[in-house]
Length: 133
Image 1 (tube, rainbow, N blue to C red):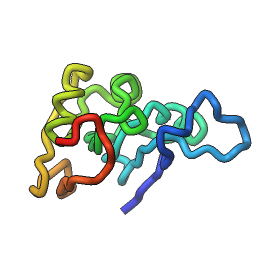
Image 2 (cartoon, rainbow, N blue to C red; image 1 turned 180 degrees about the horizontal axis):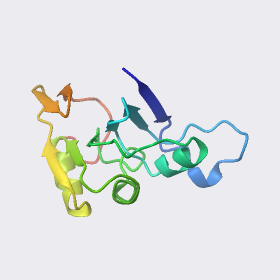
Image 3 (tube, one colour; image 1 turned 45 degrees about the horizontal axis):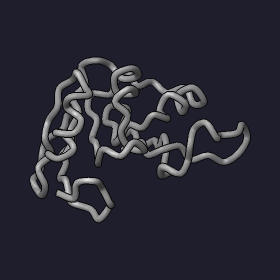
């Protein structure tokens, strides 16, 4: 399995404050085997500008939650191909479905779901979000 971390930082890493040559983590995004993206932050474009990366094979995006350091509707619309599928738990899906013109699917908690060629099981976490449901 190939995992490319395109960003590992939290929302305290602001792209406009990045200085060339200084350490900068970018917001959370990972690319698995070139075809599955976990989260899609607004800093994906900055990463691909600095580190040429082919995103044309991305078929599915797993959203962990809808915080802006993990989810950017503009990046999904403008950087990824148009026929991708976005997967999220139900509360996040309701929050983002109106912002995206793409296929959406629910990741029910504790159930194994086939996402492309992967088996995925969504688990709850203790990360503070606006809607704890």
